Image 1 (cartoon, helix red, strand yellow):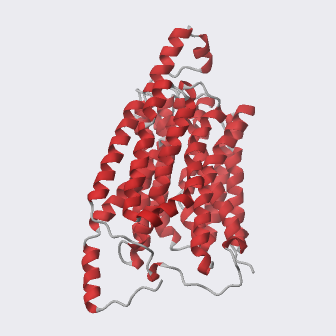
Image 2 (cartoon, helix red, strand yellow):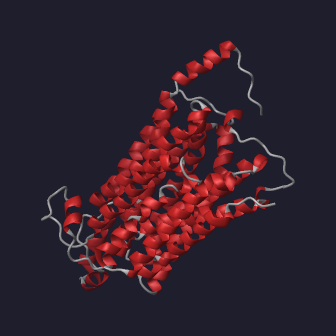
Image 3 (cartoon, rainbow, N blue to C red):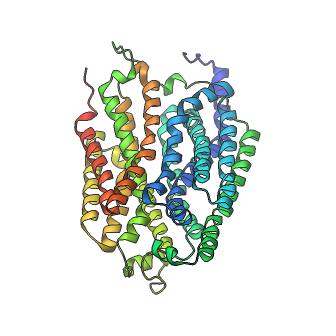
Length: 451
């Protein structure tokens, strides 16, 4: 639908509306912060539930399967919901669904039933999916089109900030107990073991009750906030339609390969972060370096000893913090370099970091894996535009397929868990190494439009 020509009075009104975008933008910023916080809490839930529910690496990785699987299942229904209720009501509803998912952690903790935890995660992620589908168009149109990229960068910064804080807070709340090994738990008297595991499971009650309460409050605030009812993107935000003989977005080779690129990128990023704590445990780091002790103890090098789960949560925070820092430095870098070349560089570095980490031992291996987060930071803003370039009238259809490819975050971590159970966690990290090799191919040849 073409945008109507604005009269002087309409232009003045539009300027007035722009001045009133502060409230809606604050709501959307809060939404992106929420996405990052609840998503990266999963990296702490994995080792926590692994112990509390006595799981294998594969079983614990189903946390990511339940969460990111919702993106695949709910992306299209979320779009249909928004068409029926509108964007503002969709945001209110999405926050409400997220709150229900958070509150479901309470009965899950009391029963200590792992499937119940997975159900809670799936419900929470369904709400997040609806929020994602609603929030991204809002970012695009709440203001001038030429500033849309800067608004998206701001949203991404808040998302990464939340993703960095989440493991730190989650580590303090969920990983504060004794790091009993599976062998130590097996040797405990049954009554003592059950009491300990029930207490471990109950640790999720407080943080997720708070998260649920905050989500309900945000839902109320969003409902009371005056937000424009955006029915569709304006023409200035929509790519020009190019003539084509194609009848489907899937007939574009670079899009199909791009769907695979998004799949393995999200899978690798989530997979690397999901098992950092498990990786650190298997490296048997008995004494942290003075640098790490200083960094994690704010200068007090005497307070830290060897690797623990709570120390591991700080490594997870550094992994996602590296992604945040890389995003800030990557934005100006990407304006000076060809996108495909930039993708080749970061993927080559990521591959080398993973392989070097697997080949080495001790704290050095762990820090090399953490540095992969910096490489991940610019991959999404490179891959997505390359994949939808030149789709013309099929741009929206192609974008939907790319969003559904986020399901890679649901499938790659369980694959890593299977490899870990069959061999060891170091070999499991060869899976994301292969993912980065595919992305290297996409940046070398796969992105090119042919036919």
